[in-house]
Amino acid sequence: MIVKIEELLKEVEGLQASDMKEVEALRIKFLGKKGAVNELMANFRNVPSEQKKEVGMKLNELKTKAQNKINALKEQFESQEEDFDELDLTRSAYPIKLGTRHPLSIVRNEIIDIFSRLGFCIAEGPEIEDDWHVFSALNFAEDHPARDMQDTFFIESHPDILLRTHTSSVQTRVMEAAQPPIRIICPGRVYRNEAISYRAHCFFHQVEALYVDKNVSFTDLKQVLLLFAKEMFGADTKIRLRPSYFPFTEPSAEMDISCNICGGKGCPFCKHTGWVEILGCGMVDPNVLDANGIDSKIYSGYALGMGIERVTNLKYQVKDLRMFSENDTRFLKEFEAAY
Ligand code: DAH
Image (cartoon, rainbow, N blue to C red; front, side):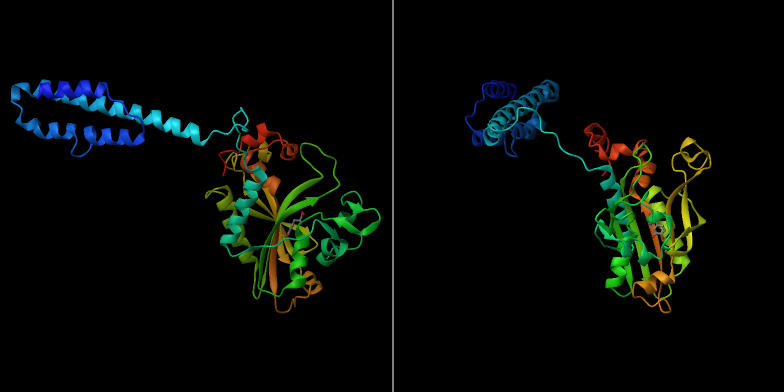
């Protein structure tokens, strides 16, 4: 048997093939089910016990060498095939970098995901809007400061036309076109006339949610808020609602979540309070329902709105808002693994 193995070892060393088919034939001959190595293995039990050790070692050597040789031949042809298939003389000599999703898109998609699991559909509206949809239909008084030139970008020649300051305008677009049940989320870009700094920008992004139906109550709102907070920031997240004021909701509240950076113990991010503000919400003011063609005696609803930049900051601690719109690929690359 030793002699036979020695012969095969020599043969293996000198193996050659001119294409992949021949390599496969050699593999079957040496390493296949009924190949030379397996045949020897099957006969191994007939080897006298004093020779078993030596024969065993030789046999293993043969197996490994045959495997290595055949793999080497295979690789040779594989790399040749690849070279041939992918030869593209117009291609850049530099490695092609893959793009990454923008952090705001990652977070927006996550928010959409959570709300769509609760049955909300996406609704969209125009960024260039009119006073009615952004303010009047949402119960803003004539002299409300948000209409002020300092906050809102107006179109000079058409004082009634403006860049929307919040995605709440999509609420009015949907309500005027549809009757309840209405269950929508509206992600989008909004504009405000602010000096640009690390903590303010003249445009940013919001997601608005609106649910109008019979018997919708504040309890429904609270439940959705809690579920959202836990899904977005982790199962241990707590929420708290503080009374607030918005023209389009009554009662109105702002929601804080337990600071997900320090876990509520207090840190510079939450100004040592353990809580961070994340969104505004409330029961849709009956005036808003009526102004948009929905009978407030039959229907009620809740609404909420949040800034995507704010949620992203909380999740990823981006310290400077301007990073989001500078397209610095070093910043964007940091989110490579986030989706
Ligand atoms: N539109 C508000 C803003 O831009 C956010 C908001 C607050 C939306 C309360 C709502 C709400 O739907 O109920 O600051």
